[in-house]
Length: 301
Image (cartoon, rainbow, N blue to C red; front, side, top):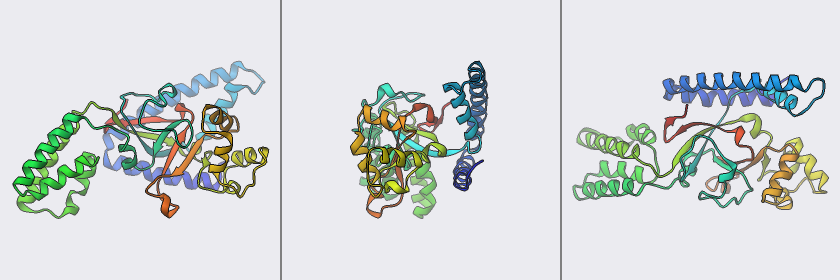
C-alpha cells in the first residue's frame, strides 16, 4: 500500500513528466514506448527467476517484489549529468575518469539543476572558437542582441533554454532578427560538438526517498539511515554528513551504506547551500537505478 508521501511524490513526478511532454511530445512518446517494452521484458525475466527459487525468498524474489512495489510510483525525477565521455549507459568502472572528485561519496553524480551538470561537460574548442569569432564581429558592429545570444551559449546554456528565454529579452525589429540568426548559428554549432555530453536522466523517486541526506539530522532521515546510525552508536541529532564521515567516502563506505539499504546520497548544491534549500545533487550507488533519456538533447532509444 503506498504511503501519503509516495502519493505526493508521484504527483510531483507527474508534473515534471507533464512538462517534458508539453515541450517535446514526439520524443516523450517514443521514450514512453521504449520504457514500456523494456519494463515488460525485465518483469518477465524477473518473474521467471523468482519462480525458479520456489518457496525461498531469495535475491530474485526480492528484486521482483521491489519491481512490483515501484509500480505504485513508476515516475521519477529528471536529473542531469555532464561528462567528457559519450555513452548510452552509466558504468561504475568509469567513476573517477570525469571532472568530479567524489567529494560526497563514491558513486554516479547527478544534478537536479542542468546548469550545475553543464559545468562538468567540457566544451568543444571548435565550438567556442566559432562563437567567440561571431561575438567579436557582433561587438564591432555594436550588435548587442547577437552578443547576448552568443554569451548565453558560451556560459553553457542550451539552444532550448536560449530560445525559451528570447521573448523575455524584449528584442524587436532588427535586434530580434539578429538574435534569431545568432541563435540559429549557435544551435548549428552546438549540434556539431563531440566533446562529451550533457545527459538528461530519470532517477526514480522511490530511490531518492531511500538516500542519505547530507544536510539533514539523522533523526529526520529514512529508517535505513537511522538504523545504521544507531548501530554505530551515533547521536541522532548529528547530520547525515557526520554518518558519511564515519563510514567513509570510499568504496568500503559505499558498500556499508548499500548493505544497510541506502540507495545513495543527496546534498544541496553550491548555489543552494547558503539558503539551506533549493536544488540538490545526488550520488547514486547503482547504475541500474538510472535511465538516460537524452544526450545533448537527442533522445536515447
